[in-house]
Image (cartoon, rainbow, N blue to C red; front, side, top):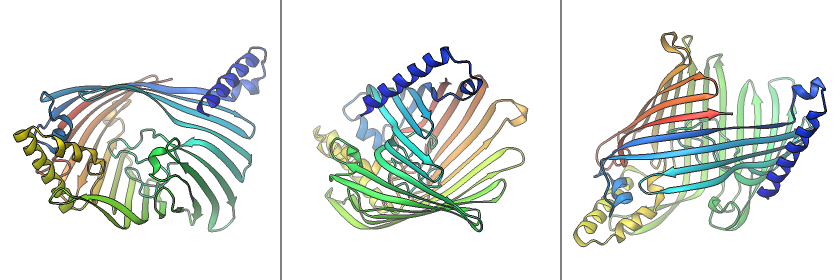
Length: 427
């Protein structure tokens, strides 16, 4: 299907280019029906390794590594669209290159590839691969039931979507209720299609009801039982003043399952209902300083005791490896990615402040981001500088320090510090 979409796009572009060679209609020149763009990115990084950290031991046991590790990441992301009358075709392939101590690969992914029809202003139909971007949170989106989780370290990165079919039914009114929109969704899953969405073959269903009520954006969201369990969500966003926005999310997942490692190394599946919620604000000062603050309660995460038990098991696995050269314990622990995922625990505070063109230095934006785990008092701190003074070129220098005691989330990260340069060229 992806190949067919690409071929159609290329044929349409070729046809349009040929037509423009013989047409001098100013209206046609002003609005092209096709678009090609994207960016190329190089991102070298330097890591200061903590050799005693749990993640270092799980990743690098049996390997000789230095205190300083260099890695290189590259990306070529393209966007192509073809739009005519009521139909639109969009594709977004991404070619990623990674060269680290553990991996060296080139991977092509289709982030998006969809066809949309808009017969009128009240109806849109879409089929293909798409990232829905549901939720109002900046760093986290607990109500994004049909999206891959974004990274709070870099929330604005493009994400790979899922193959699905959806629609938008939109109505506008006069009065306190200004807009109503209903978005049903079908997402099939098996071993060949959306294979990482769940473990059982199913056609997953859900939807979103959007309301613009008293100048407040509100979404009511549901995911039916299928490859994943039933989930209900609510989010809102409201501008209290021109420069001050308040937002929040609430997600209830029925029968959520977590794999928990016990004190003897045994594994158990814990099933319970999980309530997650987020509240945050965004404030822009008169001096062009932007503040973003969010508190996130992750009901699907691990407790402090559960995470400490996991770190104890890593320590025991390491001791066994050192004494008997038996890596079985470390291998089994390394296969459980739930403990090492982003926001694996329960309580987090996110804060980011950025200043546009300080001291009248044109095109320069410094920023600092802090992510604090409130359960174990560990912290990630990331200052950065972004420069956009060269046409179509963006330069970002970013450093990250992870701070925390032993057996804490950020204290057991593989790198105590990291510095990277991102060079991104848009075309």
